[in-house]
Length: 414
Image (cartoon, rainbow, N blue to C red; front, side, top):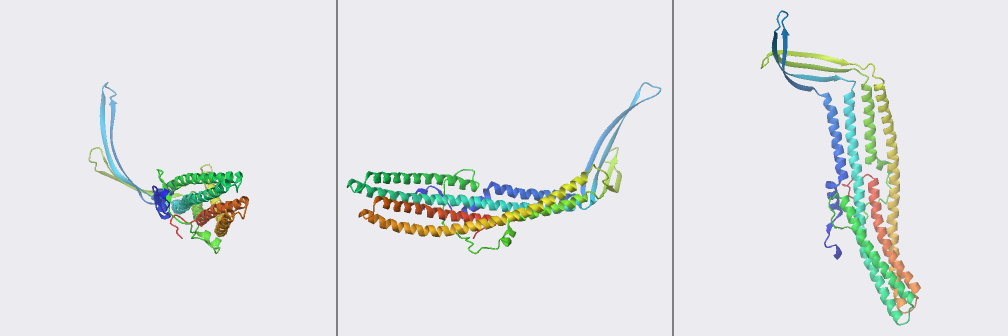
């Protein structure tokens, strides 16, 4: 770890995962969405159980009567006390409530897959922020190396210029190259600060803290052998969520058909009532009630049509999601392979550029090559250092996108 990172909190990739799992707001929303669907199913299922209500009533009534032969009136009051329990039980409703419960179960599955999908997206965001911070930190190291190269170049050119062996244009070019290198270092430090903000927010922190990403450029999920995409997509959370939504809609159609059947409920009750407390007169009742839809202005037919349309929509959406997931898998796999091969190419390019620079510097010092030829070789070395670091960073980002395309969550480790 470089000296400039000493005052910052050092975080590994595992540390970031653990913190994001606890604090990321998107994950919190997804968890509560699952809880909401579970509560919704419980609300629906409650209709299958007996509904028992207790009641108590205390009333006082007064009336006055006037005699036909007298101007005086007679006033009387009556008290009434009642308490008891009532029970209602659904017996048959065309299986509407049962199908609504099944639909609720599928909604829970959809929400659970929605959580997995969110977790996959959070992992990509978190990994991208971590890699960007790590890459920006390494760019500071590269920028410092480039500054050293430019300073050495300027020192050599200055000696040759003072001895009359080099023209002023070469000296000004060397000074401009050093200024550009210093700007690159300042820019890299600002990029680190921005990447720190990204990582803090991806972990779900409310307060921004300076952090240092501790990692390496090893790509572990290389997927060199192309997997069976059709088989791989079967576990994709976006597809599983679409399947659960389709099944929920299918139960919704069955529930809509249930609206056309009679609804039968049983009821019973027991009361104590009298004009004084405690009441001692007992009353009880038991019976069946049936309601049959006859005409509601086409409401039930419209509800059935709506349910069928939603089911067809979810069927088509399943195909859309599956096709998109397969295309994304193909695309990200290709980009991952390209990125891995680019790293290999840029590494060889860097080795060649370093060797050419060593040779050219010796040749320039002894006057065997001109400044114009030498500075081109030095510029190639600077570009090669930056290109190799960019290739390593892009390979890690390509890996992160490939893992997200597979639908892997925060818990995924290769």
